[in-house]
Length: 295
Ligand SMILES: [Zn+2]
Image (cartoon, rainbow, N blue to C red; front, side, top):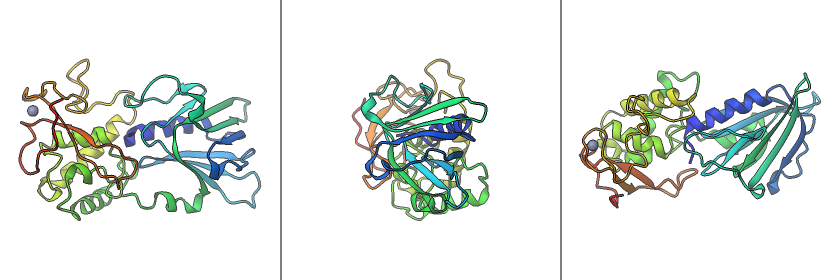
């Protein structure tokens, strides 16, 4: 499952490649949008909203209403531009089979430059009126990568988290209705950095403002980086993360063995992210231990 910073990065590259260009081809390979003919439409912009990509289109004739092509990367989705994968460190590498193509957009700029963008394995490919985007993303909490992020966003995110004090903090952070942008990597890293067990009830997880501020800072720091870093980048090669994916290895702080556990909720958007990692010595206190396997 992608993190918000991965989605923001893909949106930025798509925006740079497509904004201002006119579509010369549009092939949406999902039944509900397969008949859409968007040739002649102009790409206005590509914007992230949490983990959702919104590609906004202006009609060729003034009478028609603007449309938004919405996609979600879910677990394995990725966009390629001109054959180049918009890849981040948590997205699987390698060529994708043609059968997994869900959208192909070709476009021409005014100077004659041509661009082709292909979406592999994306989910929820939908075309809606731009004015109706909220029907797709209106349920999301404050977006950690909103350029206008301010104290009001922060307080709303804190209130959303605090509204369910019994819920495990490791699940509350993933719930995009509380705040948008955190995936499985950041939830493990945030809980480690805050010295809280991921299964701790949110009401016992300490200062929630601290969680939200840290999440915002980490996503902003990483949104332009090809390799995600939560450790400050001082630990050298292979030292980018504190606990995520490090089961059985030594904690960088206390040398205990990092444990792998599970904590998931099938109701959460875009999830299979049950797996998490934590340090059994640094992250003690409230919260029953997740089912550790020791690896
Ligand atoms: Zn430790």
